[in-house]
Image 1 (cartoon, rainbow, N blue to C red):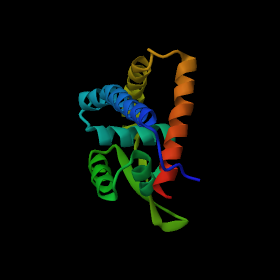
Image 2 (image 1 turned 60 degrees about the vertical axis):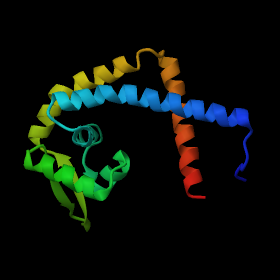
Image 3 (image 1 turned 180 degrees about the vertical axis):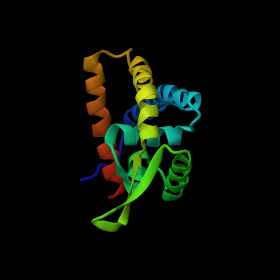
Length: 154
């Protein structure tokens, strides 16, 4: 059963948590934004390249849902990265309706150079937390995200 009421203290705690979370997210995200700009990409383009580099070929719909993008933005970003030779689209031979994006050799070679530096910068951004605290934060954020997502569909 969904809880419908909260006392003032619970509401204030939740709002404080939201503000702290939003500021922390913005601060950590700034490291990735700087990396993307340093390499001539906007943050969305960089996120697509990073996703394909770390997770391999993806359906275009999966890219949108994993990166929280609307389909028009996915198409625009994929078009631009494809024009610049970083990725290609290919139809799924088993399902002609599905289109995958995957990195080209140029894309892989480029990410081979820049991704390790990017990953170190992100690690540095989280270095204020111990490994145990990082693990705890992962668990707690997943739990909060799953719960929040579940509430959207009630």
